[in-house]
Image (cartoon, rainbow, N blue to C red; front, side):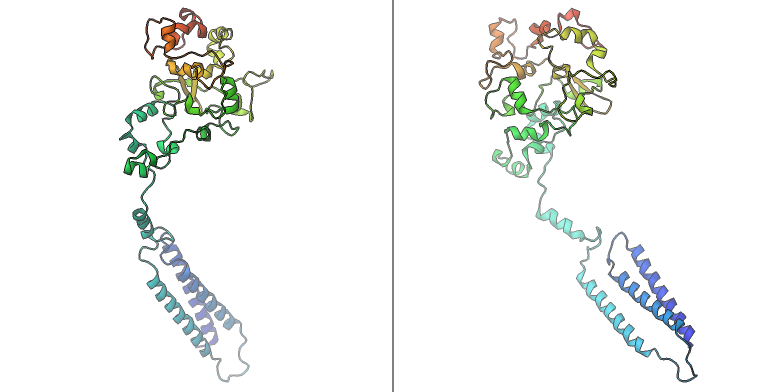
Length: 370
């Protein structure tokens, strides 16, 4: 075989091996059964063969027609490389588990072994319903309906298995609530947030160690009379913090060129004007008519007549001082005022409607809702 023929043979052999390496990478790109070891070795052999072929083609012709150039020494080199490759592939075939490559560069059995050795810790709220139907029902209709039980109580695997209360987290500390409800500029203005020191000062709370659950029920924060999903849909209400970072005064005077934003007075002008002169006139409408955002366009307006909602501010407790807002003892208050009904569910608006929005007949109706 002539020198040129040998050179082209080496080049073609190298290209063939390179094509085989590329084919292996393409065919095994999803399962990674053999990783990249074999294609890399083949690519190295291809580069070596092509380089040798190019070297032969570029080498000068022999000066005399003597003995032809011998490449017998390369046979031993390629034999060693081939034997090493075969040995490596054999060893790897024996070492690689059968389930390797089912999920990328991982053993498929690893997942199954983990499932057997380590059972799931989170059980889901459906498992809580089996024993805690009352808590689940009131939670499902209130604003925490989208919060999973284990978000607050921790993993319930041990508790569900042994049905012991000491295996579940019952954290009544203030910090547990502030994980979600601490006032942060990064949170949207429609999300319920509180600066607890300012809130305690406003409510006349004298003991800084007072827990949030002293007034608020975590399962039923707003004491809704019906599921929140059934409350009236309302156009999106904007607040200063929706656009401005930091603590913004909602009553601050806006510049003349300030963009128009949706406010309660736009549709309820008469009610808003009347409310400004009432005892609660310094309170935002959305303090009592809570707006729960559902989308970038609308939310739910909560019209709540449950007395427990009013008692969040007006219940007389040992941890409030005399400087707090007007407080009453409930349900003793019903007896003190000789109310016709002594039912604990009697709405406060039965007697106090005029304090909030004037006489019932003077309050305009919007969309059929009082």
